[in-house]
Length: 150
Image (cartoon, rainbow, N blue to C red; front, side, top):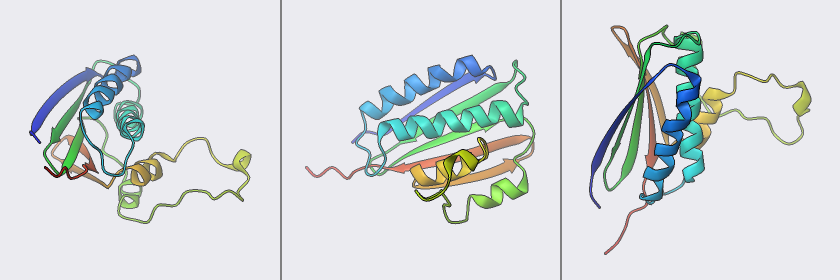
């Protein structure tokens, strides 16, 4: 399998997110994902970008959200970068904890509508991590690729 890198940059306008979603769909159609479905990869990337726009940039357009895709024979790595407000420590700390999703016996109408992004990312990605270096927030998402035998 060949390796590749793709870099995209969009304005922090929620209307631009669909373009990255389309790119994820096309890229995943050319890769053999091991466990995740292409729609799950798209959902994770779109959720991460939406969070950058909504939380880091406080829904203000005119800022950059950069998305870098890198893949090889084993893994698809996606980095979402923004230069806004850092992720709160309480949220970032959840990335290393066990996935906690509601089970079927929970009254779904009683659940909050927001606050599920981290759990969603952890449930669909093989690895999720966050770091802030200087003024740059980087959320890294990794998806294992199926090994192809010749």
